[in-house]
Image: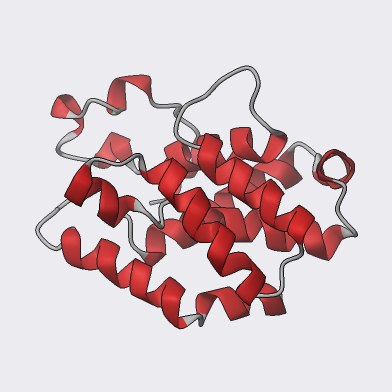
Length: 174
C-alpha cells in the first residue's frame, strides 16, 4: 500500500499527528494519536471484510480495484481525527476540518480526485450517524466507536460517549 505509506510519512500529516499528541499530553483516556488512527483504519477494513462488502464498496465508490478500495479505507481511518487538535483550541468541528485537511493531504500521496472525495466525505460523516451516510462513512463511524476499550476504562461511568457505545468483539481483544 504505497499510497498509505506515502501518507504516513508525509511531513504535514506527521505534524498534525504531533499536534494531536501535544494537545492531549495530559489526557489519560481516548487519545487521538497515531495508534488510534491505525486502530480505526484496521477495524474499518475488518468491518468491510467481515460482511463481504468489498465488492459493494468498489462499485458504490466507483473505485479502480481492490487495492484502491483498501487504500481509501485505510486513508479514511488514518485521517479521520486529523483535525482534533484544532477542536480543542477553537471548538471547530474536527470532522469537517479533518475533511478539509485530508483534501490537501491525499493528493500529496497520489490519491485521485474521486478517491479524495470518497475519503473526505467519510471523514466528514464519521462523527454523527445518519441514514444518509456513505458506505465508508458508516463503517468509519462504527470503527471509531469500536476502537476504544471502554469496558475496561475506569472513566466509563462519567463518559458521555460510553452510554451510546456499540459493544463488539473488538473491545475484548485489548
